[in-house]
Image 1 (cartoon, rainbow, N blue to C red):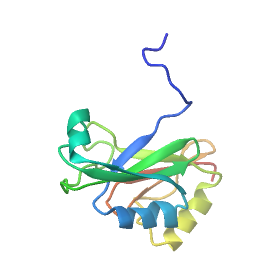
Image 2: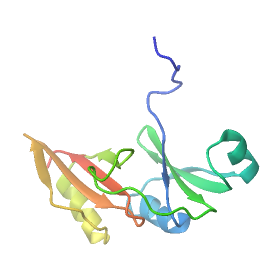
Image 3: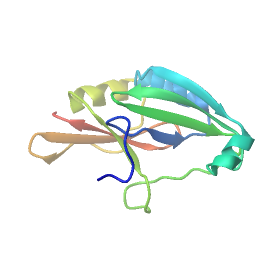
Image 4: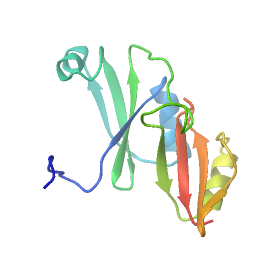
Length: 144
């Protein structure tokens, strides 16, 4: 028996960015994810919930069954993240795609920074890693 009773089949993910407008151009414009909601959390509410020390806002982008909540905090937190073996914690988001080559070509044409080459990790399964404007690591996985 699950400790928490899920109301849907997927989880949502929050990612903190420096500039919500720049992130919207990337996630909405470059990746083509539609915005499904915009929310402001006041400093009082953030403090009450224990999730932040001050006000923040986010835009939720629909990515399949998942909502990607892209958050900008008024406190201007320092950058985090890094490659997989940099530290523990959340490191990257994965998009399962129809063709890794097509995703790669479209991302490169849009000026997205690629972190490496298309790599076959198991027979018939390929990956590429790239970064959003804040340096957050993203992955596409699927057939070539």
